[in-house]
Length: 466
Length: 125
Image (cartoon, rainbow over all chains, first blue to last red; front, side, top):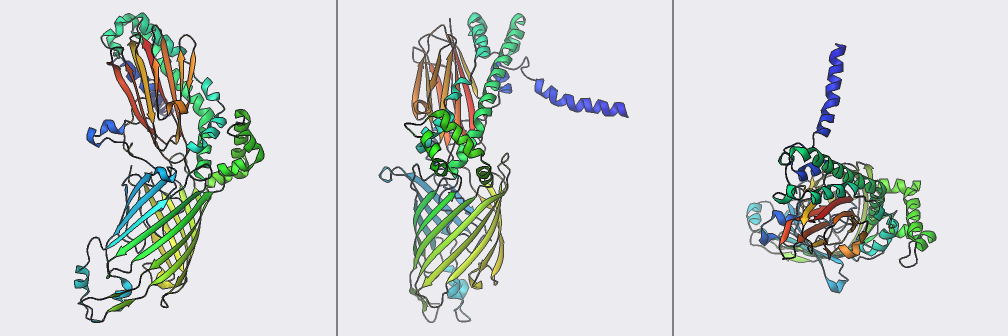
């Protein structure tokens, strides 16, 4: 029995070893040998994969943490996404009263706006009869016939969002490139050797006939007398590349990750305006303007508020080594480190909405229905943080707590509204998230899909690939 | 623009027996430019040339190839800030204007935040 266990142990140990050493077989080309040792994270060029007519440069404005998602979902969180050109986001049912919504985003940059991103968004919702209207319909009214009058484009929202970018706001690297280079300190240059690569190159130059017909031969095609020498040269050169990369990553990858986190925590301001156009049976038309401010606490602005860091990292008079040391000190400070790990984030928003008053007149409705207009001033605050961190697989779990107060004027039938929500969003993959949350309101009729002041919601959110 | 299901491509490219007087042309583009691309070129005569991100990103770098010489170019891509995709294209053109070997083309996007590529040029003697 003991022999069997030992044999099994040897087998288990030897399988991975065999897998590691199984490289550069006789049937492998030189390039295949190299690339079996040097792992790659690079992707095929998209325009190599598409037909030539479809290959064009598209402007990715970002994927992370920007913009206004589907408008006013209770399950939104404090991180926002600007999706790329015409990326569509489908919001599943049960998220809110806004069921079956299709959102189309278009990102562009206009030189007159300092080349800052501008996002155009269209939301197409499935038109349904307005609840306030149907609640007052006399019994016997044929609702099905009323619904037949609704078209596919009877509930459309268009919005435009502007996001200023620069050193103080926004999450682009370009305004901070000097700082990034200072933190690098120029020391990256020294981490590179090519002794083994040049040894292989010298062999190629000394033996050109071996490569004249085929520049990437299989080992089996190389004469016996030189095959093992070539194999060894190629393996050693590949291992040198791996070593160079590992040395660079060890020194700089944590720094780049931290810098990226600080950049992602930079404040963002958005200004947006939207217009919701609805057919008279679907509800009142609405125009709104909104301003949003969002930030994380440990960010580049906060780092540069320290006088020593500011002087050391000054664009003109700074010093690479001092700047790098200050940055290291800042991101390894226990308080800052804890904050970065939690990814604490807050956002404020203020919104003014004007809801138009009108009369619904319809052959199927005996008396016109009077819709009162109103003006709503709305303020909200959201705090979010990561509860469950999974850096390796990018499967973080995030909690967002939100409070909103709406002051309603002009319509005596509508009350001022206070809403609070807590949403936990578990990222399942880069494109799929699973939000679950509770919503409380001081007016039960304003909690969607519920007759109670408190209701629970869950859903599935997709971000389509760019 | 890369998709989630894009194919991985090799990160090492060698052009061998390159004729004297050829040119290596490198183009790296990204919009928004949330990536720093630096290249360290080593020659077998001990010469080291650093190309900064300002020289490489959204620019065209041309390297004249002289024989007999061995060149390696280590390309480092460091992503920070909002997501972006780097489009990379490098190719060797012979003195007669024809391509030598295949172009080295790839896309790169985060994660990981640091990515690498390497090119070597071995001239004909």
